[in-house]
Length: 97
Image (cartoon, rainbow, N blue to C red; front, side):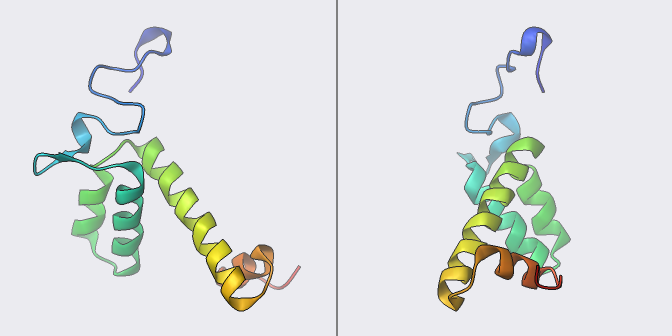
């Protein structure tokens, strides 16, 4: 992914998309990839998971999934009038802290 000296290859962009981010002639951004990946995981759709994984670099996808998780926990916490920690622990089946 990174050449010598830490420079990005010509096929990579700052938004995490690159030549692997091309699908059907259009670029997908980190958040589109993360949304598609998480939805595919929830549906247990391996084909869609594999497709979303190809849209951006693994690092970019990881960042996007993390950002989606944070936003989802915040939204659920507001909806439930609970703390983000309580919601996150509950989603993972952990006891209250």
